[in-house]
Image 1 (tube, rainbow, N blue to C red):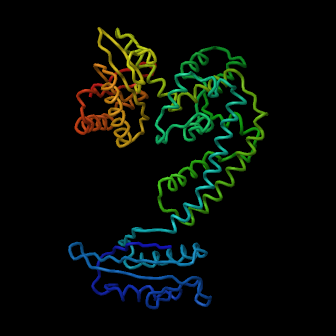
Image 2: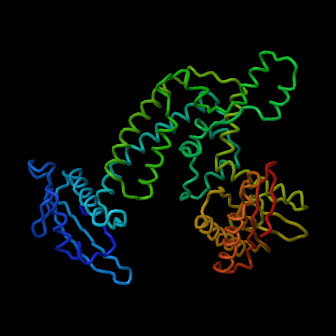
Image 3: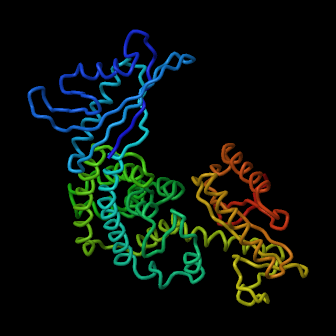
Length: 450
């Protein structure tokens, strides 16, 4: 197990200006002893050695920047002493920062300790995520009903989910549940009536009990607050904050970032507390009683966040757009091509057939993710029109408009970059037209001119 880090500091010709000077500087601390290629660390000056590790350091002056760097390498050969190895490495970094306080920078080059703690953290996070998925699934099925389940979902949407790219982190089969989106069904605060509805109530001269209930519905509340807090009591407090913190730590694990021992201890504590609260909530689901209005709101909230549903909505809106503009919508399973259709939509106008492939993207999707998926879609569509002898083809990138958010200058610049990049790098681009569009607030499709 190794850790390697680079210490960069303003050069001082008379202090820590060589390898031996750096070693002597570390040895000033009575807890550190360095002999040749070995470094021993103890808890207190009088205690027995806590751990002995292999030690090496390289240094070089950078005259152009008036800086000096030290590359420190530590190696632990005893896997039972990971925590101790973490402690001694932190001690060396702490001492290195004192070379020139305020102007010393330490960069981690290699960290097997962080990998070790990430490896230990993964099953803890995975378990509590699955408990959350189970709670949400049972909450939806028990309290909302079977209309939420996959068996009764629109057949076209079910097919879309089956065909969706497996490597897309934003979509899962409904039984697996997209955790990030579905957790909002429980935690995201929302108003149950609009401002217009509130205005109508407030214009009255006298209020009855129904009016009071409507006014209270304008106060934003999450489903967790409405349905779980009362039956769980104090045990459910701060769950959303704990989950948000765990999610940040989870991202460090998922993206292979180095995890510290302190991070691991936080993950242990948070997963234990969260799992306990979620388990209690699951056992009390039978005590929750939703009326039809609550069920409808929860279903709408789920649909508004589920990428599979939004992808289906995009296809439906594009189909309606072409139908309104005089195109005949050709059912894919009746198309005369001997090849199995691999596009979302086939339309015809004036004896010209056009294949259309749609790709739905979240507004927060990165340019790299969008380019990769669109490049794959263009290649797929190109293969299809060649085999099926279709005259025209389009690949349409679709976004869900959220007011003016989608039209921000930064967003438009990103779209221009994506369009230019695809046109320059995609083979046979002239045979497949690339367009960008949005689904507006009325669930209607519109092309964006960029």
